[in-house]
Image (cartoon, rainbow, N blue to C red; front, side):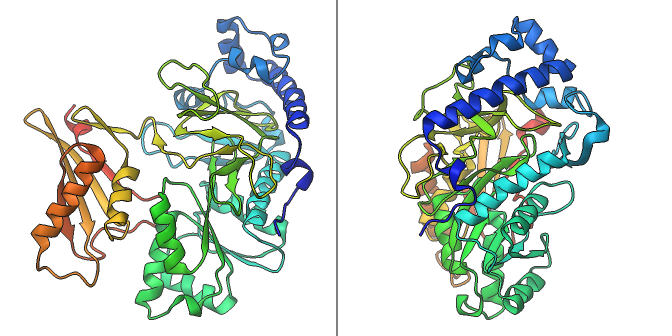
Length: 432
């Protein structure tokens, strides 16, 4: 039987949800206009006043916010509450330029943890469960978000953070962990290490995993489910909007329900900014309608996905977003072809390889090169190495339309990540 954390909200009629969103949006726009000079200037430039926003139908009138805006306004430029009312910051793992810092009132944290509690309950979590949280803690939102959600549900919570994988497995076995929360690449590594230590899925009690913070494919889901003997569920979030729990998967595992009472989603054409109808692929945009300290209106996520209102067997009426298909800013253009790392991962898993790979793009004599290093399976021998590389290269070419150089390397020779996996190195940027 499907369980809900907040049944009234999660199964609310479309009409009632729309009414709730309208009320919250109108109040939020007024709050932001009055308290955030940076956004007020953007609205004034566009000739929009708070009284012009009467319902979600008027959302398109508001200006977008981008990560560049967040960096320009760093650190306090988008703060909508006095610092005396803020109790925490979280920050992105930004690799270039200024980090993005998000602020939280205690109320913001309570609502965020409530969203994470919905995700844990949707995978079957109750106060009888042992929830092992292996997302990073500290500034990264993964650990604190799921930790708080787990407490709300009443699970025994193991705040492990990432790393020290043999100790993770020891605690998992000794304390009977039933729910695992981490990045999909780390879940894959835990499964690999479990078997290397001589254990099988019979030696652990895991039943479900909540994995997010990086793109992963359906093929990788099946691989993790097999290696850990669990059902693997997706979770989505951004530091900018709170953290994990913006949306979550249910028992149907066909996309993530967005917590629409807190976040209004739109899909836009990333080139023109035009709002697209449900069912079309485009860039995901979120408006936070309950955040107090750091409320972002029409924030461009750069994630490409599809929204669907198709009826869900779990009974939730919350709109669904597909697993992100990539990011408009992560997409590689190689020899004029749009390439997403997830496409390459799909080919590797279909060909029987583990999702341990590294994509390297470079430019030689004004021409793009694509090199893919893939770990051999432990049972594979060096015999026939060239033939295997060739057949894998052909499979990738069939998917992408361009020829890569494939290098099969020794098992475990590609550095494992205990946080977000680094899958792509684009050296062309170093030359440009």
